Image (cartoon, rainbow, N blue to C red; front, side, top):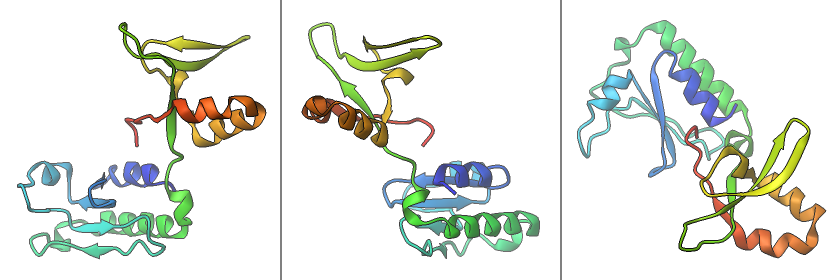
Length: 166
């Protein structure tokens, strides 16, 4: 199970989010509990570290009593935690995504993208990032393998692409 899927499924009953500052998934009783958080105080009741084999999970707050959460929701949560634990660490994380930055000039940034619409397949430049300009690590590696003379240019143009769903 990927982290993204875990969070989506937890959010059907409780609330979970990935905190990049501590590289952990935090689970809350509800989204409102998360929204009510005060600076320097963590209202999450569980923290999971997806980069650890066993998730190194723990319970966080004395203020949150597990009795406040229904048994059904706890059972669902622990089932999902077990599915995530059963997934090898390297498979939990989504594949990194990149853009190929072409040329920056006075008109702005330009990105190289691949258009694969029906029967038309072509490379083009785009003035703004689109889904056509996002490539996974494995797609770029395959492109370099297929076109070894372009590999240095691909490496030079590659920049991380933020995925809003991650």
